[in-house]
Every structure is written in structure tokens, then in C-alpha cells.
Length: 472
Ligand SMILES: *[C@@H]1O[C@H](CO)[C@@H](O)[C@H](O)[C@H]1NC(C)=O
Ligand SMILES: *[C@@H]1O[C@H](CO)[C@@H](O)[C@H](O)[C@H]1NC(C)=O
Ligand SMILES: *[C@@H]1O[C@H](CO)[C@@H](O)[C@H](O)[C@H]1NC(C)=O
Ligand SMILES: *[C@@H]1O[C@H](CO)[C@@H](O)[C@H](O)[C@H]1NC(C)=O
Ligand SMILES: *[C@@H]1O[C@H](CO)[C@@H](O)[C@H](O)[C@H]1NC(C)=O
Image (cartoon, rainbow, N blue to C red; front, top):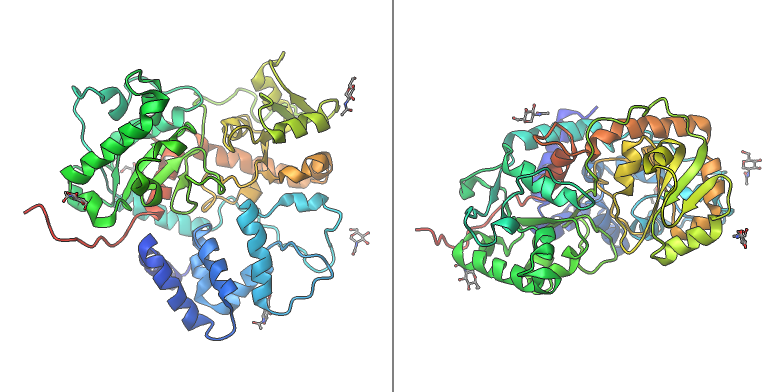
């Protein structure tokens, strides 16, 4: 599908699009491609969209291709809106792209929806561009190198800095899992000169539980840690930290960088609480760590289970969104929302429902998406501004339903509006996508570990300018 020249074009673009060069490069391209016709709005649009779907880089190759791709996108337009030029179309598109991250399928249920002109081209593929992903993944697997700041077994904070010995478990296991698997992987290099990225291996979860640090002490600990590597090693200063990353799953990680602003603004933050509207998270620089409760083996009746319930949710009612959900659907005979303790096993509910709701609580993230995928239940995401895991690689529309919180009252209408064919397609893709949301130690190709590493690979800085070599 992807011809060699477009691949070259892609990798060329990719190399050039390192974060620091990005703002220089895009205007140049645009100037060449769209000399006169497009306004500054278009510029804003491209800078916001390009990192969302890296596959769109090659859409930039030709204007016609680019417009084709745009015209097939769902656009929030009332039927009466007249398009004066394509820039206005971009602006409209941008409104919801920035707002919800994903084209809201909930448009299905909106009364203003027009079915006349814009028949959407259905994209049922799991990947935005599978061939491109596979090609790039292989290249990553071959060449990506990560240097981990070394710490000794007898370091007083070895518990925080070294990978845990036992099997990570629980709600925030992703953080420990990633570190544990990374340290043994072939991506590790002991030679910092060949490293693409540098890993700061502190564990937010361990710091939180360490009585010497605790929630109050995390910010100071991180500040001191970063100061340390800034002075002790030459690598941070070369990029201001742009080729450094850390990994955190608990939402406390968000405020942990308050006293280390360079980490917040320059480094790559791989975090579970990846919301477009949190000040600590910078979409496209940072990336989402999927929150996954680790489980062994497959549930026995994954495929055969009889899903009688339309939708299911269980959880604490700790946010306005969940209150709204409960108020609206608590007595319903098809949408089951529980608060407090479940009387039936959680697994049975997930296996017995067609759709499983992921509803924003305190944070946009919970392990619920991972849970529903594991049990073969199509996730319904009701969490505005959630930068969904691997969204620049995976086509979330092909295996989930994304609903804005405003549409909670329309939930039943939206879900029932999904035909059985469409549902089967979604569920088939759920079964296919499951492997990307599972941890393994040692890792298995395309599992959660490899996918997160791939997201890091997309964010690597290709060109590191040495600011005077302090090593000799
Ligand atoms: C605007 O986009 C449409 C496709 O959406 C294309 O057919 C048309 O030529 C474009 N117009 C201009 C002025 O570029
Ligand atoms: C939309 O489609 C339905 C049936 O698919 C049809 O009855 C209705 O008239 C259409 N509405 C418009 C505005 O075209
Ligand atoms: C990735 O690298 C590992 C380790 O070298 C190897 O086992 C695996 O087959 C590779 N996968 C792909 C898709 O290249
Ligand atoms: C990096 O820059 C900081 C601030 O300019 C300086 O204090 C530090 O010594 C530098 N680190 C190295 C290893 O030269
Ligand atoms: C649900 O049922 C209770 C009692 O059966 C009733 O008081 C309440 O108004 C109902 N709520 C809704 C949203 O229908």
C-alpha cells in the first residue's frame, strides 16, 4: 500500500519533525505546498493535528490527497452551513479535534445530524496505517536505544530507582511493569553516546509509599534528582531534557514535576493521566501510558459469552460525570450502572455486557478500558479530553465508542443506534486490539510494552547538537 517513495518521504518528514525542528519545518512545507490560499488558521490546524496521527505526514505530500482525507472526516457542521473556503472547514474540524481528540461517534444520536451530504467513509481498520506502523516498528525494534541512569543496589533509594523484583500488580502496575520489562530489553544501551533517549528511572508509586518521601516530599525528591543528573552528566544540557523521559501511572505524578519545570516542559512524560486539559500534560510531547490491571491467561468464555446486557458501569461516584450517569440511568433495565459494591463478580458483568462504560472519575484514566478489552467488551469512553493510549497508531473508532459527557442522556439511543453488523465489527476489533493492552515479562511483540516504546520512538529527537563536549 505504501510505496517506497512515500515511505522515504515519511521518514524524511519524521526525522525533520523532531520536536524542536517542528515549528520551523511545517511552515516551510506549507509555504511550498499551499503558497497563497490558506490562512493562519490552517497553520494552527496542522500543528495541532500532525502529532495526533503521524500517518498524516504523508497526507501532506500532495494537496489533493490531503483534501481527500479531510473531506472524509466527520465535520461538525449543521446542514445549513456554507463553506466559503477550505480554511473554514479546517477551523470547524479543529474545534472538535482539539475538544475531544476523536471524532465523536455520539453524533449518531444528535438530532442536528445531517444524513444528506456527508456520508462518512467508514474506517474499520484497527490501525490508522498498518503498513506504515509495521515498517516503522521494525525500524524501532532494530535501532532504538535507551540509556537508563545507573543506580546501585545499595543506593538508599534503590527501592524507588531500581525495578521491582516481584511481579507488579494492582491498579498502577503499568508504571512498574514498564520499568521492569525495559531494563531487561534489547533497547537498553550502556553507551550513552548511542542512546536516542535517556530514562530517569524514579518510580512515583514507590516514592508515594516511601515514608522518607511521601506525597509531600515527591516534588523535592524529583527536583534534587534532576539537579543531580544535570550536574553529574552532560546529557541533559544538550537538549534541556528533551531526550529524557520518565514513566508514572498514579495521578500524583502530575504535580510531581512542579519543582522541576524543565521536566514538565521539555522531557517526555509517559503518564496514565493523560488529559488534554491538565496543565502538567503536554499532548504530543508527552504520551499516554495505558492503565492496565495485569492478568494472566484469557478469560475462559471470552468469545462464547452471552452478552445480554446493553451496557455496564461500576465504580465510585466521585465526579460530576459519574453523578450525571447515575442520575440518568440508575433505574434502567438495559444500561446497568452500579455504585458501591457489586453483588455479582466484576468479570461476569464485563463478560455479560455488550458495552462497558469508562466514565471519568477524579481523573480521565482508570484501568476500566483495559478491563473491558480483556473481557471482550466494547468500551464506551465518556471522558472528555482523554488522550487515549496509542491514539496516533490505533484507530479507536474501530473498537470503541467515544461519547462526550454532554451526551449521557443520549447514551441508550447512541448504543442502540449501532447495528449488529457494526457491533460485530467493533467486537472483532476488540479481540484483535487486546494484545496491545497486555503486559508480559519478558515482553511479546506488539504488547503494551512495545507499544509504549513505539510511542517513545515517535518522540525521539533525531538530531542532538552537542554544546561543547564536556567529556574530554
Ligand atoms: C476545497 O476542498 C474540496 C474538497 O473538500 C476541493 O474539492 C476543492 O477544490 C477545495 N477548494 C479550494 C479552493 O482549494
Ligand atoms: C435521513 O435518512 C432517513 C432514512 O435513512 C430518511 O428517512 C430521512 O428523510 C433522511 N433525512 C434527510 C434530512 O435527508
Ligand atoms: C523485535 O526484536 C526482538 C528482539 O530482538 C525480536 O525477538 C522480535 O522478533 C522483533 N520483532 C519484530 C517485529 O521485528
Ligand atoms: C548544565 O547546565 C547547568 C546550568 O547552566 C550547569 O549548572 C551545569 O553544571 C551544567 N552541567 C554540566 C554537566 O556541565
Ligand atoms: C428511580 O427509582 C426510584 C425509586 O424506585 C425513584 O425514586 C427515582 O425517581 C427513579 N429515578 C429515575 C431517574 O427514574
